[in-house]
Image 1 (cartoon, helix red, strand yellow):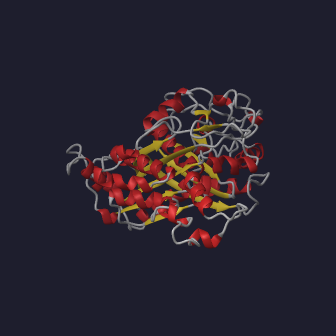
Image 2 (cartoon, rainbow, N blue to C red):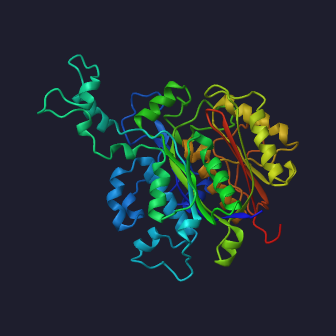
Image 3 (cartoon, rainbow, N blue to C red):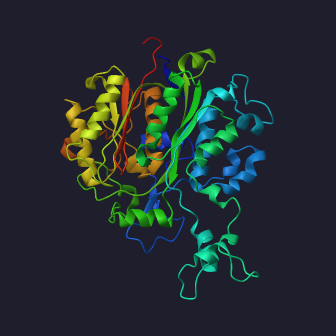
Amino acid sequence: MRRVVITGIGAVSPLGLTAADSFNAFHSGRSGVDTIGAFDASSFPCRIAGSVPAFKTADFVPKSYRKSTKIMARDIELAVVAADNAVRDARLATRGILESGGGKAPADNWYAPDPSRVGCNIGAGLICADLNELTEAMVRAANPDNTLNLARWGKSDNPSESSGMDTLAPLWLLKYLPNMLSCHVSIIHDTRGPSNTITCQQASAGLALSEACRTIQRDQADVALVGGGESLVHPMGLMRWTLLKLLTESGNENPATACRPYDARCSGTVISEGAGVLVIEELEHARRRGADIYAEIKGMASCASALPLGQADPAGEPLAHVCRRALAGAKLRPDDVSALLPPASALPQLDQSDIAGISSVFSSLPPMTTPRGAVGDAGAASQAIDLVMAAQMLKRQILCPTVNCDQPLHDIPVVKSPKTPADLAHVLILARSLAGQHSAIVLSRYQEAH
């Protein structure tokens, strides 16, 4: 079996524009949740979110590709920035890097991979169309009573007037297809190996990582860019989560303490945005080029609960199932796990289910930590950010604290202060989507021998 390791990481999150900045903020216990500034949310019961700091996408793509940023939705932009961060961290001289540097790699120790042996699997969510664009189109296609005239949407009755669709750019739809995250990243970095898009909400990144890892183990690729990205910070995202009654309504005055996963005072989550991308690589390939290795991918598992949206098994059996399968694949026992990053939905019913499922696997729970209280729920980016954080904790041998869990449910061992050195050998990263998909990934401290 070909061993697969992580050789590069990138992230954009409410905590920072790089993996290192996000990790340092996570380690220091800082929150990235604040009052929404991207649009007027004053009429909503929850007016806070985790928003990524300002950036210019053009700064993260080659000059020749800057025109393409005009057809990038926010989700795509986040993934492109995280991928640039990850590729540079892995010292891969891809086409995007070479073109940005005038045809030269930043340094002699950078490696140019064979594009046909580089894959790209990035999880995505439901990309929301820009409401300003759609509103103008809808007005053009409206009947006198403000109902929608589908005929006028496609063709105006008056040849001198434009139809609804005439107001939209010819490539408008390409901004909002979920596969566009991996498409743009693939084009920029010229990855021609196996590629796919996973749309399983909060579990997307782990499922994308599992699929990409299998392609490397089957010798269909040597390197892959994997992860997930999504922005929920827009009016439709806030409305959708409000109608589903998932958001806290008691944190508007103090946003930093609003999201409280596994805390007795938890009253709901907050929406967020971000992206995480990892460079994963076949071990011998990484060794030959002198890559810096963060961690080894030892176990992977997935399942689905088939329960209604937002509901969870009170006994947490689906989560327990993927825990056991991932550990079995890694040839580990539960007491071998040094730390655990749980789903941490910050939704009381789901948090209780998590604890029940995890407790059925572990006779003694390992230390538990999550960045969710600091960043909120970023949909398809959530587990991607968790994976980036876990890789850094293993590399640095640091255990980061969970913010806003002052009264842990059932006295679970939530990490409340940084621990260095942490003596981390194996970290289990779990995710559960609102629709019931589950993912479990075991990352291990890299060692030369098995």
